Image (cartoon, rainbow, N blue to C red; front, side):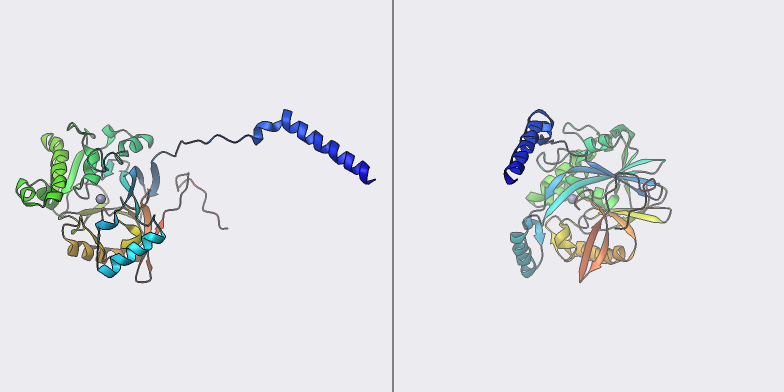
Amino acid sequence: MLKRNSLRFAAALLAVLASLVVGPSAALAAAAQHHDQVPGFYGLKVGDLEVTALFDGPGVFDQHWLKGTKARLDEVVKALHEDSHMLDASETGFLVNTGKQLILVDAGSGIWFGGGAFGRLTRSLRSAGYTPEEVDLVLVTHLHADHVGGLTTQDGKRVFPNAEVYVAKAESDFWLSPEIAAKAPKDAQRFFQSAQAIAAPYITAGKWHTFRGSEPNVDGMQIVPLPGHTPGHTGYEFSSKGQKILFWGDIVHAQRVQLQHPEVTVVFDIDPIAAAATRNQLLPKLAREDVVIAGPHMLFPGLGRLHREGSGYSWTPVAFTDQWVENAPAPQKY
Ligand SMILES: [Zn+2]
């Protein structure tokens, strides 16, 4: 009996093996790896506004760029030993289609910053279905090259030929002043040079506009002065149907450090005390309100909300969906 069963088993096994050889053997072959990635954009509805994050490139914030007490910085170094990804960041610009105007908020680095690691914003914009020619307005949070470099090619041509560019007057006056540039420390010189070269073709074309308190005429958009990081650092808040989104520029560079410890500043802050004060005023307000934040250096897509956590804040990224929220079924409860 035992023997017969063993024979039957052996026969069955042979049959299975044979079927594997002639039949579905392909299913067992190793699948080829595919290296295509999703395109670098992500869309979100805010009321009637279509907001699209446009990826410019991945970055890592250098620990030496952080400024704070020795105890705090020692803590960061220790945490970095345990988690080497703690200072991972992104470069992102944002597109707002209001239905009437196509508005870009910051333009990424182009060739002016990051030694070629960034500068993918235009490609991301095309992937999202737009062309640079369609952009009507560019709202600039500040004139550091990683936010405006994408405006201008290496040979001084406008990347967005039909766009009117808006920047705070204090910002434009500071970075475009030859006198201030001449007095600036040596390592700050490159920021002045790039700002001037990037702005030049828009100034020549009469498309460089500066504002003091309020100006660019966009329905439902409010200018939010956020000085400190740079003299005219500006946020832009859009509202539609009771929903709000704030494009906050460089309020936070290293999200894992500065949300827990908003007093930590960065070497690029022109006025670190003002930068920390601005952050300390803004973060509690954003944690109280239901406002989407668009942060160019928050991990892509840089869209999320703030909540109080202990003595600091935590960041909740927007939940991914592959459908426009208005068309999508409501999220399922588990
Ligand atoms: Zn920046």
